[in-house]
Amino acid sequence: MSAPALAVEGSLELSIRVEDGLFSAVSVINRRPLSIASAFTGQSAEAAVGLCARLFSICRRAQGLASAQAVEKATGLTAPKAQIHARELLLLAETVLEHAGRSLLVWPDYVGQPVRLMELKALRGALADFHLALYPDGDWMRPGGGRLAPDHPQLTRRLAQAAQLVRDHVFGGDVPQDLSAWDAWTYRDGLTGALLARSIEEMGLCNFGACAIEALPVIPDDVLNDRIADDDGSFIAAPTWEGSPRITGPFARHAGHPLVAALGQGLSARLAARLLELSLSLRRMQELVHGIEADPGSHLPPASGTGLAVVEAARGRLAHRLELENGQVTRYQILAPTEWNFHPQGALPQGLLGQPAGDNALLRARHLIAALDPCVACKIEVV
Image (cartoon, rainbow, N blue to C red; front, side):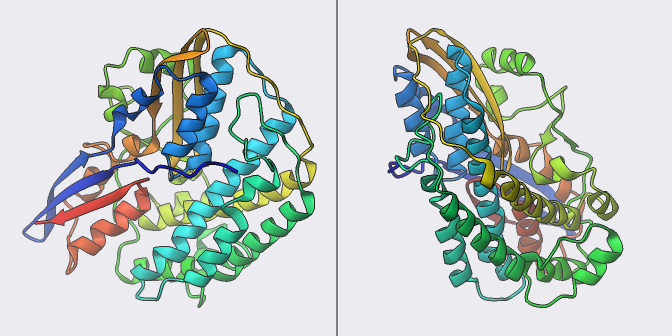
């Protein structure tokens, strides 16, 4: 069994000022312990990966797998195809759990409905320990791959349970693919996604939060490795690319979809992107689940080197970089999605400044914060 997470994510402190009915100032203070990566220094490579999987309770699978892949890059170890497919399945399961979980836990509150605790419990029952149906020893994060022994009947049953919950309570049979279908779908009852979409429309907030922040492009590994290696801490704390803040996550990944593009760049478009990603993740899991084969995993050789791994986590692009000397970690760095999405001059300030605050400025700010989806708690003050 995997050890429990230690949960050291920290928080964001957001101070928002309203003057003359408009959002006039936004301050983003990051209280996340970005120096926590120093805890890996002196650890063996495998111990560092295990520590990483325990330190983070949010997107834990993505963090652990990024760490394992960074070690593999540093040691020249290539994971077998079966391990790569199993890891993709785990990342997708975590993405489904994160997106669908928020739709059951957070979205009902925005539309004045009770949180769907029973459904959330059932979803977590299906996916929270999904890794054990693949890696019965709980060693899913081991560099080179753990003992992969897929229980196909259990995997199929868990996936079917999760898919049914999402269909019944989040978006129905299928996510709309164009604007006319979206307009009709928003009036369906009982679906958390449709209820939130209709609420956003009725409040006149469909394009609220739109801004000119561009999506984070695909950066070549060698370029990103050099940028992080030369960092004195300021880049990881408030990253920019080509001199500008960027966004990452579902909206950035699906901005080119016809529905998302038609809805613009505000709350409706971001909601649609999240729903599309949820649907696509479930579909991809169904493609993968029957083809996962058993594999004993590989042994990690003691080595020296540098490794960078980049994975697309539920909230956006996550990068882990480490340096090894005779199998020991001498430097470890993590660049997380929240630092991109909550840059002090990024999508939140640019999406709020100059916008009408309405009768409930806090609610409007919370809507945009939830759309950007931080991986930590937020303390919000509206003046």
